Amino acid sequence: MTARASDRARYDKATAHLEAPLAIVDLDAFDANADDLVRRAGGKPIRLASKSVRCRALLERVLAKDGFAGIMSFTLAESLWLARSGFDDVLLAYPSVDRAGYAELAGDPKLAAAVTVMVDDLAQLDLIDAARAGGREVVRVCLELDTSLRLLGGRVRVGARRSPLHSPAQVADLARAVVRRPGFRLVGIMAYEGHIAGVGDSVAGRPFRSRAVRLMQATARRELAERRAAVVRAVRAVAPDLEFVNGGGTGSVQHTAAEAAVTEIGAGSGLYVPRLFDNYTSFTGRPAALFAMPVVRRPGVGVVTVLGGGYPASGAPGPDRLPVPYLPEGLRYDPQEGPGEVQTPLLGSPADDLLIGDRVWFRHAKAGELCERFDVLHLVEGDAVTATVPTYRGEGHTFL
Image (tube, rainbow, N blue to C red; front, side, top):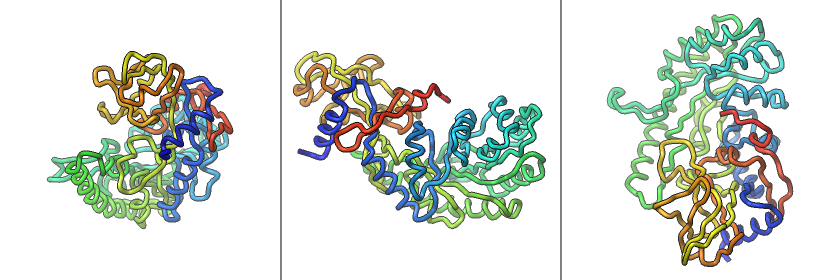
């Protein structure tokens, strides 16, 4: 029996008493992935990206491990909810225009001490001040650096379009504005190099593209390491008490951790290891989060139909954003239909061994987005479900 066949047998046995559709997290794989992230970070703490997990019980499990410290959140409402729930170090990784949230933050000393907000524009400071509603608490601020690689005098850009702050001078200018402004405290810098950390460099069947990605990433790492160090020097000249410099992502942990200017790493997808993280030379993880859909039809030889399954991930549309049939091995989508909202036909010889009511296990393309589809995660250890915990959705929260 192959390792994957053994996993399928375990998952089927563990969840036999449950109705599909359902989602699981294999805790053995989850914990092994967490340990690998810590190893690759080389002693620097990892700030846990909550959008990649979206389950409070699993956030708590990870943060109880040595090597993890703090949360990187994705909305202000989520940040405040986590802080009220007892998480005392929450970095909001994206700017917000949530005026009610800012009023709550500025009016509550516990929340103001626990949450750091992201800023890359003076207009965001103006909005926060206008939203205070009388609250006088000092708001903790982090500045985001644009990590994109710019070539040919800026005519070619590689990387996500995030912050407008690209040069050390630009970041230092905004740092001075924050430091001079009453009611704010500059505590950190963040720089997420998504074109390095979030792009696979070993895509099966595409050797030339993979080689080009590796070349781009090597160039980008060198350029960013020099520029990030210069940015940190410039900002520390303005704010010597800077608390943290955050960088990295699951695909670049060891490379970013090697930069002296970086004090902590951001990561989260490497815990679940969704299908987008199969194509990396920098690490190999174990798939930990899966969902199961029941077989409801057998339309013909070599075909079964499962209930639902059309759970595309965010990003540029393409086949890589779709879930992938994982267990049993050898199933594939019908190219004329793909994964559907209500039903999904699957082709391949393994279909002939599947009966009505059997399960097909899938892996989602991106990590935490799976939790927007399910109220609970069933936690599997060995061949048993040892706990069932709510996702954000199961607790009544869909923050985006």
